[in-house]
Image 1 (tube, rainbow, N blue to C red):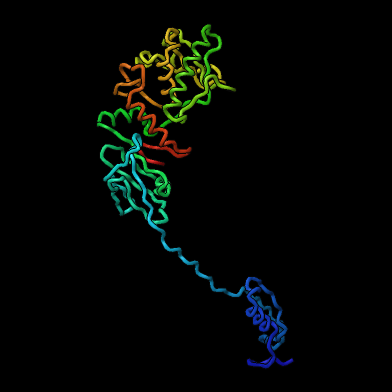
Image 2: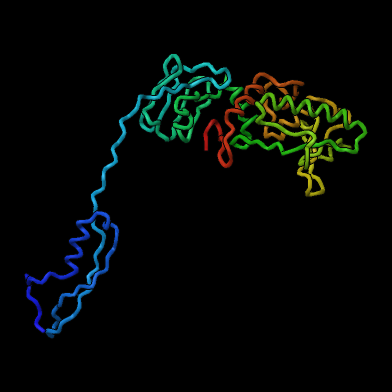
Amino acid sequence: MACPLDGDAATPWAARMSAATAASPAWSFVVTLAIASTMACGPSGDARTALVILGPTPQKETPVPTPPPGPPVRATVTNGWTNVPVPRARVAMGSDTMVTDQAGQFELPTPVPCVPATVTADGFLERRVTCLAYAASQGAAPITLWPVESNEELAALRALAFSNGQLVRRIGSGWDVDPTIPDRDQVLAVWQRAAARLSGATATHLSVEIPASSWASVLIRPWAEPNDCRGPATRWFVTAGFCESSPPTYEIDAFILVPPARMTDEAVALRALLYFAGLRPHALPGLLNEALPADDLSAFERRTLHMLTLRDRPWPGGIAWPDTEF
């Protein structure tokens, strides 16, 4: 059988199939196998059947139009304690720095970029956010700054709330009073009032159920002597009126040991709750003063508790010193 020459009038079936596929857009993503019935010449002149694989026909992608930028978003920087706008605050975003006006506001492009930013102002902790778009909440909520009134308060704040370099909140799911003590109901009422004060001061962010409805992770009980405490009892724990001890059972995380005469002292109860919430003694006057604890929260301690409610980031996120999101 003779082999057809180039330009022969006989059109291979595969070529006709390719033309049909190109003419039909609906076939553009179909891979077609076609066995052409044309004859090809081998080296010895014998006739062979050619296998032709036809791939998808390239299609031009329709470009997605870029939406025009919307109006700029006006975000506000405020004092987290007083909610008063902070003028002349500096917002650094990459190589750009913006300064708030007298209303504490600055403009952001739309859409607001999700980029790290640093916000600084005199009299406040430097705040670093991981996503400016989230912190600004598209202009719906202010960016709050943590006020600090002096260098002494700065050192006290670090000791009180950032003792291990970041905010710590560990208060336990439920507490209870030792059911074997004779005046349990009276003691229970005092510790419930202290828990309610803590919950109110932190907008329920630091709340504990006393007594626990199901399982108590912490048990309050009287101590026989300070040596019952975990490790040697420090002077502060003796002055504060409580300490922590490891229980002999895995069913309870910790014992809070209190001198019997102070089991109904509400200041001791509140101090213990704050300690288990991650707060530590500091040098300024207040309920957690390291030398002479007061019977009530100071203005500095109340302000700190309020700011904790504004920095309640879900796990595994948190706040590192001084006011850095991670």
